[in-house]
Length: 303
Image (cartoon, rainbow, N blue to C red; front, side, top):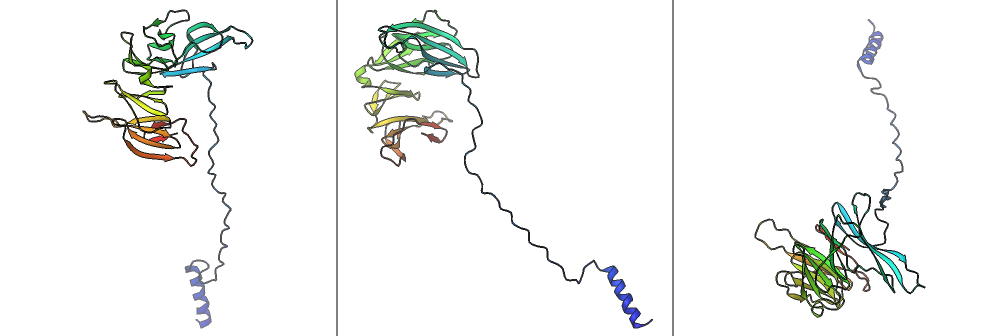
């Protein structure tokens, strides 16, 4: 066998044993082209939910006692400015929170030189009764119908009033008739403080279950429910406030209540129990900014 034939045979054998293209120059694949990736859209998503209108009445005040919403409104019958005597209806109604036919609990016609609500307070409910002030402190069962007689308590609360409830009591803060407590079981009223002790133009009436709070003369005032003792927080220029309490998991313990106050353009936190300053929370950029609303939810303060 000649050398030439052996060389050719060797090349044939190698070509069968080795993988294709071994030893040959490889054409490098082209680098993939980088596509333009659009920048992430960080704008808020468009709101797609449509709110459902439950009540079309001009609402004066409302309260929610699940599963019902109770509200008070004024229905104008004749409020023509050229008429000397105006006529309107004070109305209290209810509806289920998920929507339902509206039920009217109270409807009474009033007359006067000015069209304004005869109901001079917010409405409250405990699920059994709806409470309001119209001349006197009154209540109606939540199953009432127009024309049913409302129960009234003795006690002069015929004034603009704000009401809160805690436990078996309703507290009524009036503009010029003092502070009252109504026992819901006995349905009796007791005056706790006079108008002078309450202060001028009281408003923003709230309770945390240990104290009653309200603003008067630009200061936050509190009354301890256990002994009716009144005291003021130090800051002036208070426009709004809210409060929070730590939960008690191991008894006995006393919840640590804190009060957040809008003082001019800042929010300060105070201890409710002794009214001492605790911490400055926030200062707005403008000295003219004021806080119209604020609420605590969990560990967050919203305003």
